[in-house]
Amino acid sequence: MTNSKITYFEDLAVGQEASLSKAVSEGDIMAFAEISGDRNPVHVDAAYAAGTMFKERIAHGMLSAAFISAVFGMKLPGPGAIYVSQTLNFKAPVKIGDTVVATVKLVELNPEKKRARFETVCTVDGTPVLTGEAQLKVPGRPAA
Image 1 (cartoon, helix red, strand yellow):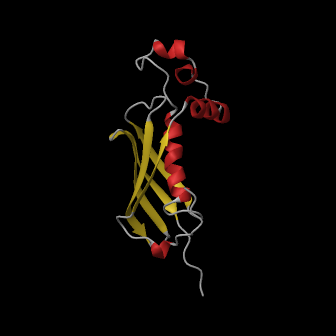
Image 2 (cartoon, helix red, strand yellow; image 1 turned 60 degrees about the vertical axis):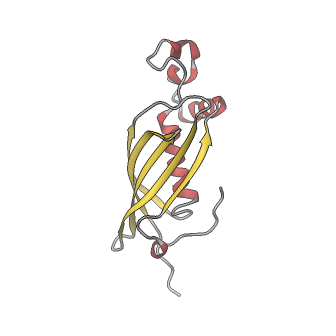
Image 3 (cartoon, helix red, strand yellow; image 1 turned 30 degrees about the vertical axis):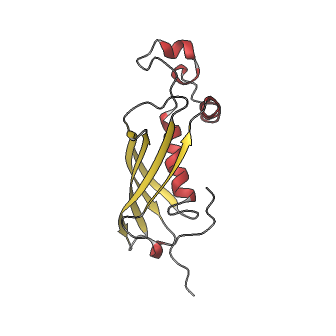
């Protein structure tokens, strides 16, 4: 998944897309809980989660959002791009063993500010679990 190629603002075009997929493991959820400090029992305690509307443990919503960040940082636009903003709408839970597909689609370019607006979505089996929109600042091509 590593992309060492820098994509400059001038290389972007509306309609470009990139995605990645990741199967979510128990280890991923526990590591995210440790790193983030979010140890909500719906994520880390099977007995507690069994009594919730989900009936089992679910991944942190922000874990799915992190997959969007990975697409931006590693694929499109890639290294050098800087997150400016992100909206998130959580649509459905992600469970242990689900494969999340994070996709970003370039929908608008602002040459004056070298900003790019993207639609973002994470799906599991084709069903959206997270939708949103992001703005990124993308470096321009250096002067020759």
